[in-house]
Length: 268
Image 1 (cartoon, one colour):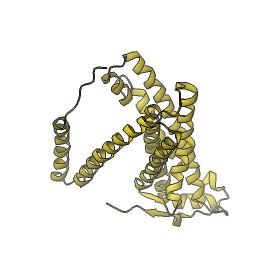
Image 2: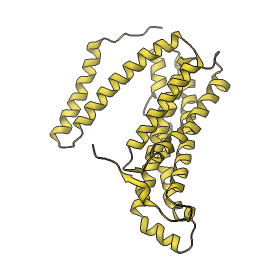
Image 3: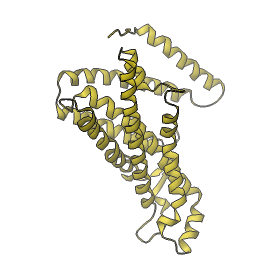
Image 4: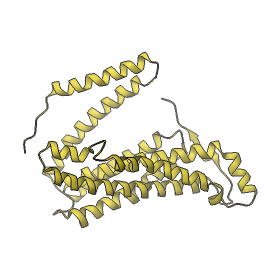
């Protein structure tokens, strides 16, 4: 394949525009300059680290190494889900709700795709498994974070409405049903939008990468369709699971609203 190699200078040129945006946010008093620069630095360090790690994994193919890498990715994604919420669950629940939901959705669908659809031999070859799982976790993480954030914020803002419904005799699942549905919808809208504009407004990342690497366009399109369907399914299942588990956690065994189980996120 005819792949154009990028130099360090090329990356610095792209990084220059990130500094420009950070400077503009500073002049406009948006308080985002530091976050942008930290995120850019994290992107650089994390991707370089993953690049070296994948090189090692490609040379030493073994399911245990793949499992270890997948576990690290899951834990990192679960932490980011918790960090991005305005109000989050206290203790282990703040972490485990996202982790469990992504484990149920992203891991299971990735495994099915590798074994049943792609059928690579062996199925745990990292050049297929790691990118696929990464795309699944990344998109599912965003959906779950949005859904849980909407759930907890909505329950906090509408606590008097929920408590009035409970006093009128409604069970917990009916008292919070409107917020739960809106939270699921909020978490799934981004991936629905991404599917709706794919090919018209944007060329998705995997397809673009394959084309740049020299793959036939139609083959890249087929893989991208597969990825979009898997991501949408994983995001939907993950959001539904996380919001359902989170909604139940907001109530005790006597159907009382327990907002003391939430804490406000620290402002950075």
